[in-house]
Length: 276
Ligand code: NAP
Image (cartoon, rainbow, N blue to C red; front, side, top):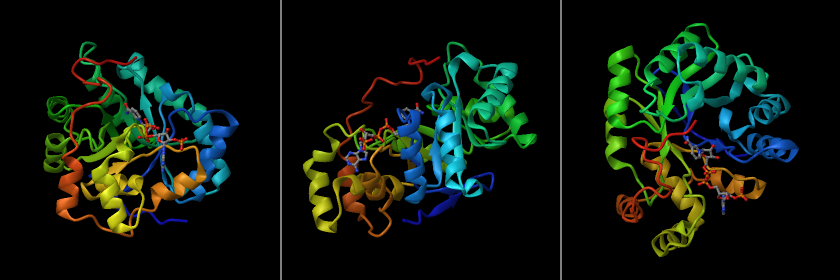
């Protein structure tokens, strides 16, 4: 089992430098994949109402027998934005998870045309005050949206989970996060596999360190100060993906990997893309 190092979030939460994505992990097979990830050392689990797998995540947490060591994430979906709606959504998530606390609670997408993310965040802060939620954060927020949230609520989100991989390194947003003490979390950190893992530059660096291309990509995330949440249904890949803390990329290697930048891969610009 790999021991994944931690960082401390702006609210004092001890947070893994690498976590586990669960999108598409459903049913008994999905539960078993999540149990396997926990056995392989993952302590941060990423779920969402819209992944329709909170029951599976909760079941895996119970089977693991180490609930207190885990950070369970779920997210408020767009259709449940609003103060009362969010309180209701959180209680429904807790019920499906079968847990008494959501350790990291995120707004899944800002949905600016709906314009209810500030009141949504206020409800999350209230839930945090009651102990139903641990850390509060957001996903897919821009610098302007984060600034507004902080100005209007007085609370800085602990995390912003955004699309990030070598094709979209998010340098500007990461610099803003660093200036405000917001932890970056990378979704689709492997660019959903795509052609990323066959890029020559990554293959060359992998060979130089005696590791796999996937490990190079995940180490790049952690050295840039982001927590990647790779998803794998395969136990051997789960081990491979977590075992990235035994080597260091040089500044030149980090820059060469970031040089693959080409932009967002799936058109998920938070100014225009909305999810319910
Ligand atoms: P990803 O983690 O970049 O890639 C997952 C794909 O890579 C799967 O097909 C997996 O296959 C494969 N893979 C994993 N490890 C591998 C390895 N070592 N070698 C070869 N292939 C490997 O993509 P993702 O699932 O889209 O993103 C990760 C998580 O981010 C999601 O599960 C979800 O929790 C979160 N997410 C959040 C948002 C948001 O809006 N906040 C959006 C998208 C995703 P196998 O499973 O077959 O191994």
